[in-house]
Length: 225
Image (cartoon, rainbow, N blue to C red; front, side, top):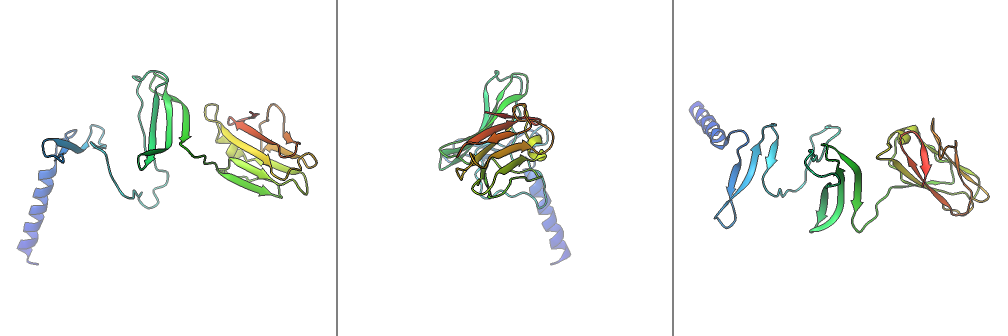
């Protein structure tokens, strides 16, 4: 390609960019479907964030390689909403609610009462300890722990990392269940890996066949509920 043509192409590209550029906090607009109005498309706001003016329809969203911890969505909350006002976002499939994640405004610019609501489905990670003790020393996503007590007594030890992932407002929850129906003979002893008690004691014991306990951990101690 001749040098003069390259220069002209660069000039055209620069002109196109300049024609598209708008002032900060002004919308790039498009004509609506019926041709009588406009739709706000994109703008760069005063915080140098890109805002989308209408419903954003997309295919696959993908993060850059090795991005690490990604915040997929954030909803800032000011002191304006009344205390208890729900602040949430919902994922839908074919218009039907599937998953809602949210919290409640506290009228001081923060939120409390974080929650996850699943519509029409229950999703909880289950780990089968089987005919063995349960004692991972890592952070897990475990929620239901099933234990086989057929041959021997079993120990369930909640890791320090799992304990630390709970807090007073957002406790970590575990359900421990005897699935063999032999806990009356072979007890299941539950404890925290390092410091911390369960209902004020060092351990909690499941000693009835097919029994289970639900433990709430606040980052320090566990409580049976």
